[in-house]
Length: 264
Image 1 (cartoon, rainbow, N blue to C red):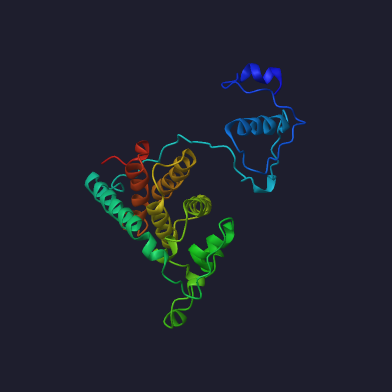
Image 2 (image 1 turned 90 degrees about the horizontal axis):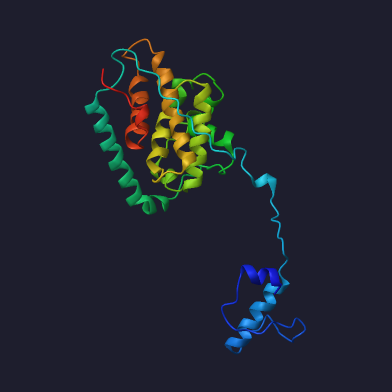
């Protein structure tokens, strides 16, 4: 070994300097401790001083930095925010659902999927949007004729619900990816029931403790929900309850307390 390396890494055992010309077969196991240490010396002497990793840029995700926004939610109009009692009950229900999913994940992941359920690959953002939201919502096309719906749901058109047999098959990387895809869609569009069901299900499958990028990610639908809620004209709007629920779960369950609704 080189002297400068020896200064940084002093010898702990009295082993003679390895002669690179010595006949050692590194593919064969050492016959004694001395031979083992000599082989280690030889392997170290063959290592280059500087090693450069070969990185494939295509495998790097588009977003490498974690940007944590500290912006809070918009205040709810008078009478539009839920009571503290309601929020606590939703958190309790959500916690029970998470525990149930965790307990029965292996069971549900073993259930065979119907032939028409073709789950997209993890990095297929547009395919996941179509899968979860349905082509009608994704393409902003008019609803299917009621007469057609009576003959059976076309999940390709209306979106596949987050059945346990589906979400139980998703690993944490896919859950985070699909969450990001749907949140990106929500940032530019209005709230729809399919979106609410999938966001709820994915959050229920998201394991704690969260990574820093996950904290930033889940804050986005809460803030966006508050923006949509601020523009509602009536407390009877069917979107109000799911919007309040999204804000409540992110703030109260995932400890983003600065986003929480206060009682009127």
